[in-house]
Length: 187
Image (cartoon, rainbow, N blue to C red; front, side, top):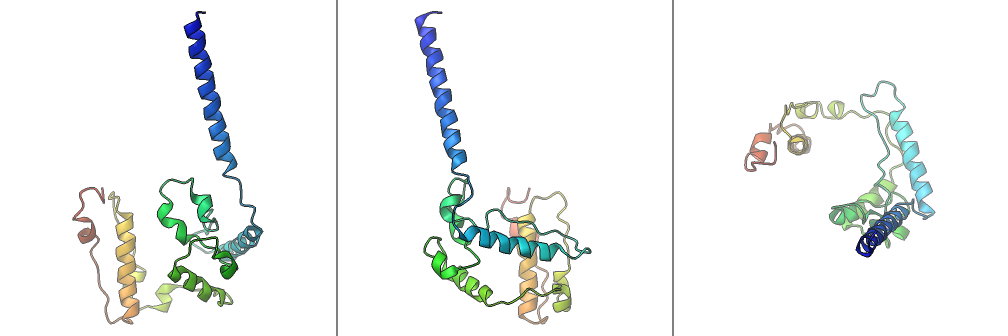
């Protein structure tokens, strides 16, 4: 083997080792957080999930959101997460933890209100709570159109308008109008 080929092989081996070390360092950064608050929050969510999933007649299943209790610095390695760092606060110990997590004023206020809630109702069906709002039980068929985001937004808007007006306004808002100005948003 000639010296130039040996040099190329050595360079390739060095590059491979550097890449493997980079991957190893990245994987070490994925380890679970060491904060003592995490077990408390994880236990809270596990209990809540078990309670939500306990009725046998449920049409859906709650699952743990692995991003729900992660600090902003732990989300940094995920692509496109810079804009959502302030929406993953802890559910407990808000005052002491707020220094470490970027909380918006609205989210912090919402969490304070959640802290005073003593229990989740055993049963809640929005269709029963607001029977005058037909849109709450309405499930739209989007067919093959990739506009689930628009369906969700428009459905929520219709529901919220009806609820806020106590049934006086029951609009059928248009998903088509929302996606019609964008050639690539719903295909």
